[in-house]
Amino acid sequence: MPIEKIIVLEDDLIVRRNLEQQLRQQRYDVAATDTIAGARELLAKDTFDLLFLDVRLPDGEGTNLLRELQTQPEKPLVVMVTGFGSVESAVECMRNGAFDYMLKPFSSDQLQVTLKKAENFNQLLKVNAYFSHAEEDETGYELQGISPAMENLRQLIRKVARTQATVLIAGESGTGKELVARALYRQGPRHNAPFIKVNCAAIPENLIESEFFGHEKGSFTGALNKREGRFELAHNGTILLDEVSEISSHVQAKLLRVLQERELERVGGNRTIKVDVRVLATTNRRLEESVERKEFRQDLFFRLNVVPIHVPPLREHKEDVPYLARQFMPRFARKHGVRVHGFSDACMAVLQAHRWPGNVRELQNVIERAVILCGDAGLLEPDHLGFSPQTAAPTPSLTVSVAPTQSPPASAPVAPSAPAETGPISLAELEKKYILSIMEETPSRTAAAKVLGISIRTLRNKLKEYGVTHKDDDGDTAEIKPEGDPN
Image (cartoon, rainbow, N blue to C red; front, side, top):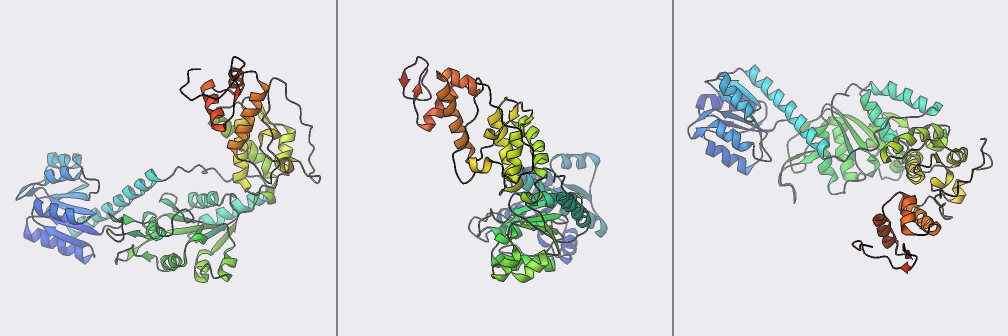
C-alpha cells in the first residue's frame, strides 16, 4: 500500500530540509513544520499516511503528540526522530504507539528501509481492516467430486495455478466458480499475499468504481476520508472479480487500463498508483455473446480470457451427487445438532433423479433442509428433501436399483411433501406445513411441542404468525394469545 502524504515535524532547519528533499525526490507529498501546533493544523486539514516526529520541539515533547494521535480514528504511522537516543526513550516511544525510531543523523539507506517497512505495514493494516468488515464466507469448502469431469478440472487448476496468468472462470450459478478461484490462489505463487474478492453484481452502480479503485477525501458526497480500493488492497496478491459481466461499460474501460498498464487513479485523484495483482474473474454468462451484443468490451474480454476454465454443471457429472450429499450431511448435522445416520435408498434415488438447476449450491441447500426436517429420525427420506411430486419421482431411464420407501412408524410423524409446484418450496413454507401437520395429529399444544422438539411458547408464536387457531390444552378451541400470555 503506497505511502503518499508525509509530515516532517523537525525544528532543526537543516535536517528538516534535507529530509523534505529526499522524500520529494521520491515523489511523496510532503508538508513540513517545526512546531506541534503547526502539525495539529496540518492534521486537521488533511489525512496523512506518515509522520516523522522529533522527540524534542520548541513547544513541547513529541511524545505528547504521539500519545494524542493514538486516540484518533484516522492517524498516520509515526516515526520518532531524535539526536539524543536512549534505550529508555525508544521503549517509551514504541510503547506509546510509534511505528519506528530513528537516530540523527541517518543515511538515505536507513530512510529507504523505514519507508519500505511503513508501506508494507500500512497495507497489512488496510487488508486486516477489510477482512474484519467483510462478510463471513460460508462457501469456503474444498472443490469436491470423484467424477472424471471434476478430476480433469483439478488437474487444470494445478497447471494454471503456478503461473501468473489471468484466468476467466465460467459456469452456471452454483457450480463452485469461487471455489475454483480460491484453489488457484492457494496453489499459486501468491498464496502468502492477500486474496481480495469483489462481488461485481452486489455493489451499486454508483459505488463500484470507488470499490475498485478507491477515492480521495471529498471526491463525492459522503467521501469523508481517503479510501483505498480493492486493487490497492490486493497489491502483490490476487483479486477475484466475481460476476465480472455485471460491471458497466464505463468501469470496463478503467478496468482494461489496470489490466494493461497495471496502474490506476482513485476517484477524484490525479496520482497514478502502480499495482501488481493477479486477476481472476468469474461469470455465469457466455461473455462471447455479451461481446456480440455490445454489452461487454471485446478488448477487455480478450484480456480476461487468457486462460479460460469451464466449471461443468452438476447434471453433467451426476455421479458426484451421492458423494457430495454424503459429504454435506454430517457437516450440517454437526451445525444443527441433529443425529442423522444416512440416506434411505429411496431418498438417494430421488437425489440422483433430480436435474439440479441450481447445481451444487442447490444440493447443499437441499441437504441442509433435509437434515433440519429429519431431526433425530436417523435416515433422510424423500419427504425431507422438499421437492414437488414431479421432481421427486425418479425418471424411468434412471438405472439405479431403488428399494421401496418404508412407511415410518405411527409415532414418528413425517414432514409433508410439498404441493405440486414447478420447483422446490421455501424452507419457511415447508416448516409451516410440517408444524400444521403435527398439530392435526396431536391432541394438544403440549403434545405437539414435544413431538416438534420446541417449547410451547415457541409453538404458540409460530401459530400466531401463521394466523391459525387450535384446541388448547384443555380441549377447547381458543384463539392464539399474545406472546406474554401466561397460558
